Amino acid sequence: NVATDLSLLALARLLPLESAGRVFVVAVQTLTLSGCVFLHRAATRRRDPWPIVSALFLHNWILLFGFLNFQLGVALMLWAVGAWLLVRERSVPTRLAVGTTAALVLFFCHMLAFGFYAIVVAAIELGAAFERRHAPATALTHLGVGALPFVPGLVLFARSSTFAAGSSGGVEFQPHRWWKPFALARHFMSGNLYVDALTAAGGLVLVGVLVSGAKVSLTRRLAPAVAALVL
Image 1 (cartoon, rainbow, N blue to C red):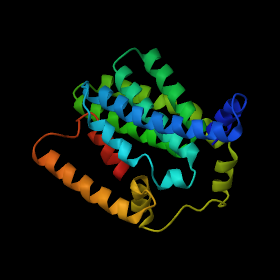
Image 2 (cartoon, helix red, strand yellow):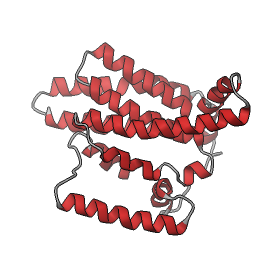
Image 3 (cartoon, rainbow, N blue to C red):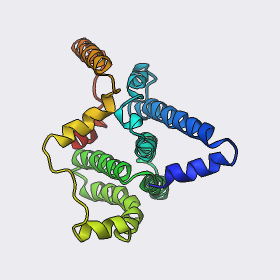
Image 4 (cartoon, helix red, strand yellow):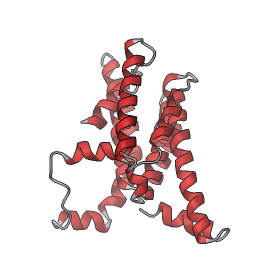
């Protein structure tokens, strides 16, 4: 989790520290919103206004508690997934270069962002491999190329103090069953219960209207990834 530290050190050379922090927060929020737009474009090959809806959730519980490394990692992960969708049918060197660069950047942002990216890429490639099941050699090649970009990050993690602490039993992850749903809900919590309730109700109504009217749908390319992240 060093991306925020390195970014702020660079900005602090140009601006007062408080101003550098403000600029960094705005940059993270901008990357998140633009990442949603870019991922939508890469997945659907269309220009639609719907990704702008994500702006409603930029101010959330995670921002209030200052988890900027995580937020930066998630923002860059959106760009990384979009980039993978754009290059996954190109040459092997191109896919390896884009995938490895993205994986390493996310690794130094936050391990969860690195893990989310790995899950999404794996789900996309497994879904594509199922469609190519009648050409097993091609399917296995794509799966292998999709897995290789994560090897450097995994090697670095295996040599880290975090891995050593976990191996010795020094790290205990949240065991409660309700924790995962709550962790998901935190992305939509602003810190104001009434605002959250109104946003949730309005969002559910909007999604219901759009889905029932066939105005919005889940793109087939990302359906396996969404299912994998939910699970």
